[in-house]
Length: 219
Image (cartoon, rainbow, N blue to C red; front, top):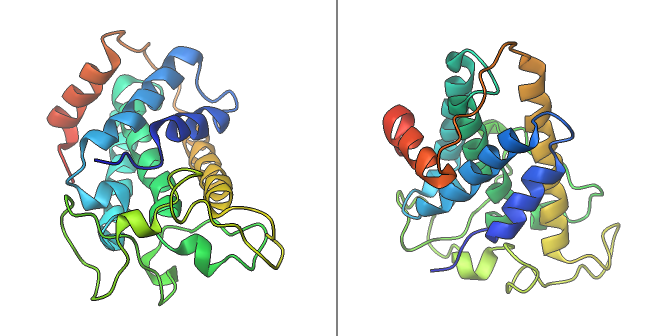
């Protein structure tokens, strides 16, 4: 089993984009929630695997609905939902060919997470454990397409020409995922709900799993 956008990179992206939105305890919960999504290996929508683009959009929207309905952006429920949607947002750039389709642009644009704005040639890697499986015949596998690390088959490829010459596809996926993560932080900061209670302080992974079971389950 290969972890997606290697766990350390998910944590780095989430921490780098924070820029003071959450304190260290709150940020720790968001990071834990993000990492916990890799327990959901069979859910294509959580990772934008198997061309589950519509489902991934719905998954992110559902997590935003949890945040907005929770009543505060810094409480346990909102932190869990935010970490979850960040994971999915970040995986889009590592698991699809968005980077390859925009490699002649610098910086590579952040996707607006609207289905009608996806290029006709968009595809994500097929993942044998994941469901639903929505890719057409001939789609690349996750192992072939992922840019989860600098050493993956696709991630280590270096752009030869154009404005991104000399950069690896991993570098470009990471940079674009970071920009997308910052957009999500800007959105939650803009909600600005006051008087949030402190995080509960239980074991982070156990708390995340419990929160998902009670409030959302697997989308």
